[in-house]
Image (cartoon, rainbow, N blue to C red):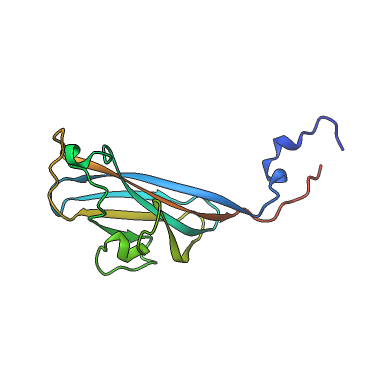
Amino acid sequence: MDPTFSRLMAPGDLNVQRWKPMNYGVNIDVPVDANGRGQGVISINNQPTFITRIALLFLGNTADPETSGLWQDGQILVLMQDDQRNYQNIPLNPDLLWGPKVQGPFRTLEYPIYYQGGRTVRFELTNVYTRVLTPVAETFRVQICIAGLADWGSAEPATR
């Protein structure tokens, strides 16, 4: 082996696991008015990925909703599409789309969603009712995170 060769120079050589955890997120500003819509996209890297968990959180002062007017109430409709592969006829409440939330922000999907590398997932969020926020704001922020396992292939032995 060449003494000047470093295994750290070839990260693929250090990949002892084929499947790596991946997390992708997007922040979406949604109007406070009823039926206001916000959009965002998540681009999957070039590795095939199984999405196994998903989370949707309202960002801001949700710890004091009486004062801020911002509740972690889930009263938002979600349209999730990727190149017309997964179909929805209408935007759905997150509990109906991804399953009821039992504990914590992440929901484990009933069945994983497979994406080939390089796909883009589009989210459109619709506010269900008019929210009155303090301080006054025209939008509120929602963060969506999708998580799963990406296939990085089998580890290749270092050759030089």
